[in-house]
Every structure is written in structure tokens, then in C-alpha cells.
Image 1 (cartoon, rainbow, N blue to C red):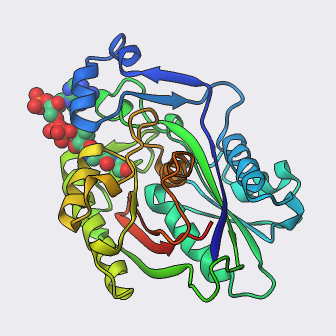
Image 2: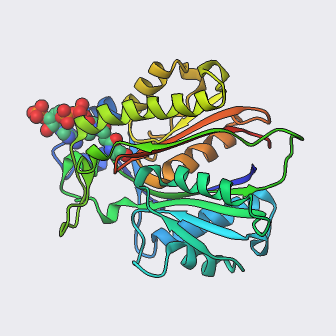
Length: 313
Ligand code: UT7
């Protein structure tokens, strides 16, 4: 398995902390100090989970140098589909003119890594040679714009990865170690309550458990690969809060220079955060052939998922 291409898409409208402070009892200093977030992109008219996902997918295919007809499977991780049926993956497949279809994965903020893990496993099926894996969320559709406790944290966007079976580095496995897990006792810590329209969250409790979960899952995946933190060239965790990422990296023993931090301009984009961060890292020249990359998602459920990869492009 290898990642053959990456793509990103965010809505046009950028909303800064200063913009939010004009209508909410908050401040740029509070938001930056508690989260590292300076701005987020919020979907406007015509920008949907599907349109963002399709755009990210189109860019990932272009990055991989592949035509839409080459795709055998499309998975979309999202907690905010535009409609309950059909799946977002079916709508994206139609928009991109794919010959293949697929299914959605709802793992909230850990969804992209769940979907990546699933696609990597399905590449063992001889009928699947190219998988398009997309994380896309429009959390602005489920966040109360008047609740300062959540409205400042989230943004909209989509990121995509093209997975192929080919081995650019002969004999080298793509996936070195994985972990799938969670803490179901935390199911109510971040939820859209039954009958409710908006996300409700116990922020401090989520902060503690998310940090613990990232550390547990990252360690487990490294352990299964017989590796340690010294064997991580780049750490790409879910981008919710710079302080959670810093605390998890510190406890794992991964130094700051090996951590991808992508919250400042995008905030927490849920399932999109990891592919957006990977794409930003690639653009910045931080992903090189042979790099060992630790990718960890965590989110509502609580659910988490980690893949420890050898990068080979
Ligand atoms: O993908 C997973 C999604 N979510 C997360 O990962 C969130 C995890 N949690 C967090 O990131 C942090 O808990 C927050 C950033 C949400 C909050 O930071 P905190 O350091 O845990 O602050 P707190 O919730 O303990 O709130 C401190 C104070 C409170 O005031 P009092 O009760 O001390 O008077 C809040 O009412 O800050 C107040 N507050 C705000 N003040 C200004 C809460 N939100 C805001 C705000 N602006 N936007």
C-alpha cells in the first residue's frame, strides 16, 4: 500500500477570531491561548460536504496523476453528510464521474483514519487497486453559532488521499503498525444529543481523554511495529487543539520538530483535519520517501484509530 496523492479543499470564506469576537463574548487572545486557532473556513451557499469532498478528491487524483476512471473504491469519512441517503461517497462518485462507488464511515474526528485503515485492508482484494479516501465535514451545520464554547473551535473542509497497491520502495510494507480502539464510557462527552440540532461537549474532560487516547493509540501502533518514538519522522495527529497535540507528542516522546500542527488557519475540521494536515506537510516538503509517519485520529465516541506508515513518494 502506498499513498499516491493528496488533495485539500476548504470553503472560500475565512472567519478570523476577531470576526467571531464581534458577535460572541470571546477574544482572539483567549482562542489562540487555549487552542492555537486563529481562523477557520466556513462553508457558504453551494459549499456542501459533497462539493468539498469531491474537490479534495479531484485534487488528490491530479496529484497522483490518475484519471477518475482508475478508482476502484471511494470511502468518505464524515459525520455531517448532506443527506442521510445515498452515502456521501455515492454523491462524490457521481460528481467525479467515477466508475466505482463505496460507502461512508462515521468515526467523527477519527473517521479519516478509520477509512484509511479500511481501504488499506481492502487493497488486499485483487479487484481493488486504487482507493480514494476522503475526510470531509461541514461542522458549521451542527455547531450553534451563538455558543462560544464550541463555535470558536470548528471549521469546514475536506482532505483526500489516493491509496494504491503498488510498491515504490520494493519490499517495503506501507502500513507498519495499526491500532483501533476507544473509550465508550466517554460516549456523551461530545455528541449531538438525541432530538438536538447542535454539538454539546464537555471540553475539559474531552481534553484529558483525547490526550490519553492519542498517547495510548500511538504507543500501541508503534509497539505492534516493534518501533519507538525515535522511529517517528513525522507525527500527524487529529488537529483539534494545539495544546492537546503538544501534550500528546510530549508524552509520546516525539519532539516538536517532528509534529505537524495545522490548527491555526483551519481550526478543527473533524474528519478532514488529518488529510488536510498531511497535504500541508507534503506541500511544505516535510514528507519524504522512506519517512515513517504516525497518523492518529480521535473523536466522538470516544473512538480512535492510528496507522503507522512508511511514506514512499
Ligand atoms: O475533536 C474533538 C473536539 N473537541 C476538542 O478536542 C476540545 C477539547 N477541549 C478543549 O480544547 C478545551 O477544553 C477548550 C478549548 C474547549 C476549553 O479550554 P479550557 O482550558 O478547558 O477552558 P474551560 O472550558 O475550562 O473554560 C475556561 C473559561 C470558562 O469560564 P469560567 O467558568 O472559568 O468563568 C469558560 O466559560 O473560559 C470560558 N470560555 C471562554 N471564554 C472566552 C469558554 N469558551 C470561551 C470562549 N471565549 N470562546
